[in-house]
Image 1 (cartoon, rainbow, N blue to C red):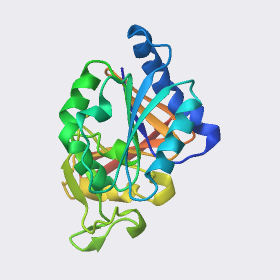
Image 2 (cartoon, helix red, strand yellow):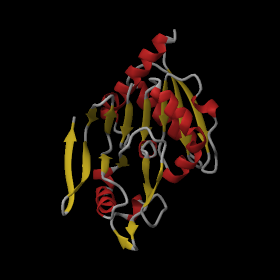
Image 3 (cartoon, rainbow, N blue to C red):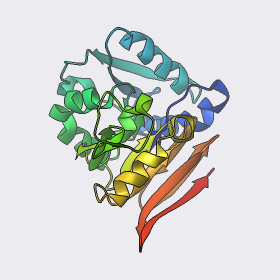
Length: 239
């Protein structure tokens, strides 16, 4: 099974391409468990509009087929328990303030890793994609006080902040790239030696990480940032 990293966005015309592969994998798991519809654990960490965001995720997922959503909505100071991902055929972590998501998910990160290793597909939307990495980029817009990316995408952090994430993949992830100008953040973080490069996903786009394979679906691109002699190398690939 695979790790699905969605760069954000809600364009309905992209939804089936972006969410369909994840739901197809979850449906296979459901069939093996004797269920006709996949049971999808959806975890949302937001203040005020968590139920609305969860409903948007369900609507997007339903473009791929029927499902049984099991939703957990936490405030920014909430902590997830194992019940949030229990007996699931697929796990979805939503979007919002990335540092709050990492704090909330930290108590069950080991269980998420265990389930994904056992074949449960994972889908991270925006913040959920960023925290999936071993070394997660949580936000920020400056390095040493120097601006390197738009402040609007800073996740309420000043300096670019890297912390241990869930650990589902060994490459750092950023999102909303073409739409919010976050590519320069990953480039600057790589050049400064904060990370060893990474993958950055546009809105309306999903990066699918399988067993030794990478796939892209949706309307945008995935940007690859890597260390290079004398600088940083940037390239793209799309669906």
